[in-house]
Image 1 (spheres, rainbow, N blue to C red):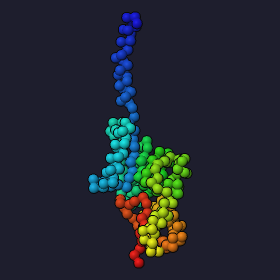
Image 2 (cartoon, helix red, strand yellow; image 1 turned 180 degrees about the vertical axis):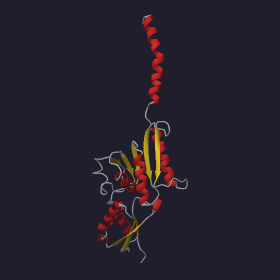
Image 3 (tube, one colour; image 1 turned 90 degrees about the vertical axis):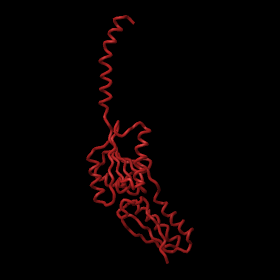
Image 4 (cartoon, helix red, strand yellow; image 1 turned 90 degrees about the horizontal axis):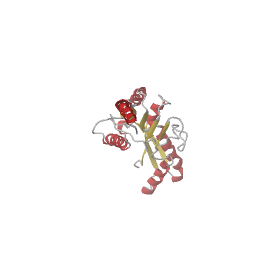
Length: 221
């Protein structure tokens, strides 16, 4: 390389380096919405572990909260009114993606947005609940993980009969206003006659300690 060419290149370096630095500084920080039933308190062990797993998993993939991504935590607790209000608040932040834990929170988010990508977990029957078209091709703005299929509730009843063959009456205790748990109840009810079991259902509200699956119990004689 001729000397004058080298000098010309050297003259460009003071300009090129600051431009690269400015480009790095201008990189947009991504925003993740995180919507869970947890209360956010240290005593809520499940909530603490879930949040820790999210933060650690993102870090492995190169995303660090406060550096190149911001995690907007929203803890819904119990109560449908609070869940709807929290969903509206989270969607108003216009995050790049939302992680939703549980079907009740997913339903509230979908009532607010059909544009922001949503990843769900702990939704018992996303197809039966109408959240996705099917598991292979969910469609829309939603995808995620289903911990179990509705048909498994019939197997629970079979297992109950194996443990206690004398049982002829059983009750399904389910969370009020939970479409996935209705699917589980119906699956259990469909298999009850063949097992000579009369099945009844009880609706209640578990608040922040609710579970994604219905619980089954055999009433005392």
